Length: 358
Image (cartoon, rainbow, N blue to C red; front, side, top):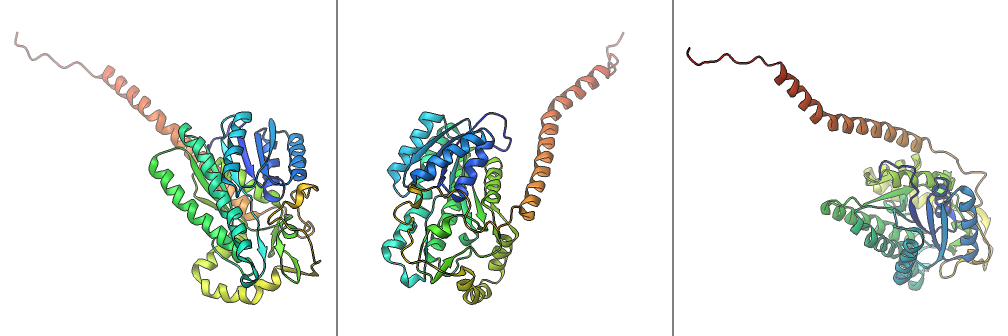
């Protein structure tokens, strides 16, 4: 999978009706891939199909399914293969969350976040591997977050789910490496992104929720997912300098980061505008069932189109790929070159004088 050719691939994306999933769908479509888009919202899915077809997808199917339902995910995987062919890439992105202090989140809400945002990844990964392993080919990309390492206040359920995905993916990766299979799994840890989730998730905050700045456009995330799908040998990718800084600081001084987030984490996740009471959320039912929200949220004026850190990683990766490819070509040519050299040496070797007596 590290060398991507012109042959269209079959790509399955969960959470494809909006946000990162929607941006990923468009990015894969621009390559001419075949897409199976999984989400709950009918209007969002239909709009995603139209957008990806216009972007150049070879074929697109929409599958309404809740990833918290293992049987529904298995059926979606089978439909994808029946209609599009063997699955080459599976991208897990579907999630939901609750913005509230932990004590204000009900057990039912916490369970629902866990079922969608963690177990949804587990069920989908199992459905993908069930088909990839017998063919000894395929890639599963887990869309993660800096929160997979560094939990933040007001997002205890989501933080727990992302931490769980991280541990699950590490264990699975070890098993795949031990088995000798060519199937790979990798994880992409995302920064704050301008997606509709901040108007979708259930919230008990006094003000409207927002991502912790700096904020990036979902296309930055999509480029990272495509790169990870093309280069799955690396265990995970960090996107954005803010993600790198957060994860490094957490590794070095987690206690100090606890205190910093205790002081800043509440205010930085609210935009200063009062939240309207009674706003719908997508915890149990999709918000985009009758209205499409697209990939972007309401932070276009503040979101960054590019990440210099991402560009540097991809540039270094391209150089590394070129060097590895050259080394493989040289290594492949050495046996033939050595054999030819020996043959020439034998041909030039002077005959030994006879030791027989006259």
